Length: 353
Ligand code: ATP
Ligand code: MG
Ligand code: MG
Image (cartoon, rainbow, N blue to C red; front, side, top):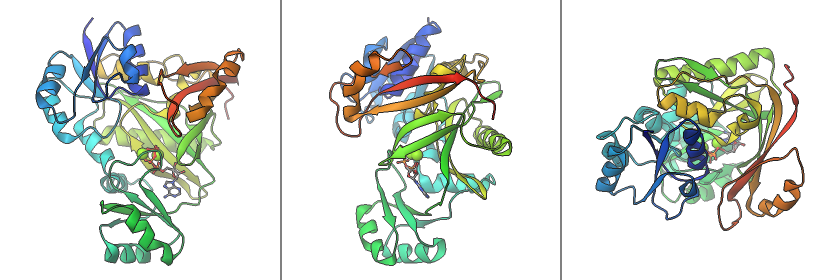
């Protein structure tokens, strides 16, 4: 079969490789680290840096289409790849999601609600931003943050100096702290011909900035469910997006606020492996390979639990629980905060709230 290229070889690349294999494709994974988690399940692995243009070009030349499993692929790396193969989702989607300030401005321009925000490059900016946005707030680096890294809370004006120091000179964004009742996300996809599907929103619980569980159905009104699907569709259309997208939302009495989006399959979409005929990984491969999209409707209620760090010690016990569908990423060392695997549990046939 033809070859699908994936930039990044983490667990998302691993599960994309499995899905691609089921559809008759081979995957070629590119990652700077030797022996990445996706490596065991990909057909070919290239170990080379993001600045290695010849290696990127050679990688892409052997691929029918290239995608990525993390949003921090450098622009220059994308240049080298794009000269040789089509890349989905588009570089616009990547560029927007790489910079929290650009992302928030994009969302606001689309008419979607977000937390109030302001750009912060230095101490005078921060004082101005606090006056504009109000407290409590969160200062975040514009680029390269994940799992809550690169963030500092500002509860009182006295916290400002330490928060700015925590940015280590990197350009930042101040966001008003949203008093949400809970967090949800919507996973959606758009195909090459423009068709879209949205999965049912999942309710997400984070601890220490890292996703712990996703539960479907989420606690949402019918109107909020519609809103979630529509706003995801707006983002997909504006970006002429091809592939799967994950959109994180805050639920507030005033409605849904968009936190951020990821131009890729998303941890909070792992429940689709147990809850839908076509999960997010197959959906992404279908979309980027130009296939019709599959059925993303939810047939079951599911709870997805991440196995983080030492949680992986529970695997023998989980293995004795017949309802625990285990996904392990083949990562060697269980460092604190490291995503080692996840468990999906079907909790019943789909309730239609
Ligand atoms: P991810 O791993 O999802 O990419 P990230 O590092 O990009 O995470 P965010 O999603 O911005 O970080 O924030 C992580 C979590 O922190 C959110 O899911 C939410 O619980 C909390 N949080 C972030 N921004 C705000 C906000 N403006 N108001 C309230 N809580 C927030
Ligand atoms: Mg993020
Ligand atoms: Mg997030």
